[in-house]
Image (cartoon, rainbow, N blue to C red; front, side, top):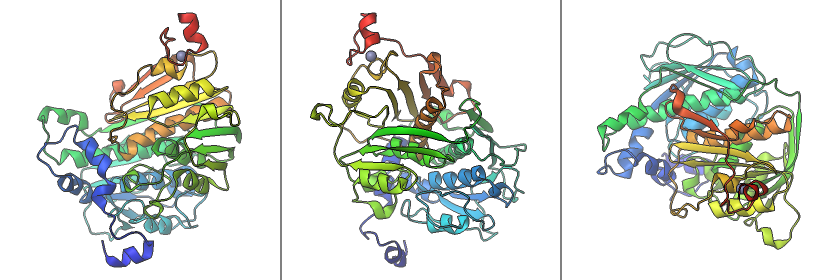
Length: 445
Ligand SMILES: [Zn+2]
């Protein structure tokens, strides 16, 4: 870190990259050799150089811009260095937390701001990257082997190691964020593969995917949607990812409250998509409300949601991003309408939604997680998938096309999205021992 950067961003010089990557390093420790220090694991990410290539035509749509901006953010939050080969272009719709009206300038301005040491710069045309990502059908720069093209449409995304993808043409950007998350996963796998593993046979989980895709169900994107009142429980990684996605959907409106009693810590920067280095120490609820304004009118409530305080009732839609299982039960008992829950567990995500009359989130998660208070291993792209799935569930419901009962729950392990077993959709079974004692569980009993 050059000292001048501290002056420019105004953050505390005692901050450090290894601390900011702590939860990512913890996740790597599921598999890497026990003898590695945190600094050695971090070095595999910090020394990785990724080139992002995009031309004017692919950047002339909101989806193309969203794909590139999301990819750069997900890479930066892993500490990976990004070089951009792209023309300057005007921002079509805002890309918070980036500010500014020019895309390349805004992306370069995010250098060292999403995570210390994660530099974003304009490619000099010479430095050889470890990996290259090419947006849509942009003309590729010849840089070597590890190269993927990012393509997609309204709700689905694809990455292709060989072969062409179409130009980014969509205005609706969910597929763009899918494509960026797929690509970020490849960069993560590349970084961890460079480290010695405890069990070398585990490397198979982290093999590169020559191509991968995901589609959140093809429905015609709405002209505009009013999500109405939405209460957001936790302003952490999952709900920040969901709001990051919702903020990018054209003509989507919502209002509501954000409940969180915590302040942003350095170890949140590896995954909290609306947070920046300067925000360390700031109340998460206020930060999220501020980043979502003026698009969404969210009132920050700087405390945990307490059902017994006889406050106003919960809104008709509730987004639940808390990891604590008993807290989810409390929210489910108090809820009158839809409860959308997402969470992560190591390299996997769980996402479900529950309306009255359906098996509830207590039926889905009936047992308290014994090690719920321990530091949670997470990485940017896994948390992002959890939030994106949450945003899609909310918007599909508002559009009147909620997922059917056999897709009430999604379990996704976004490491090998080239394999069909990466995703498991399932119904939620009503359980007689449901801790919430929802209507369906009482019938089951
Ligand atoms: Zn239940």
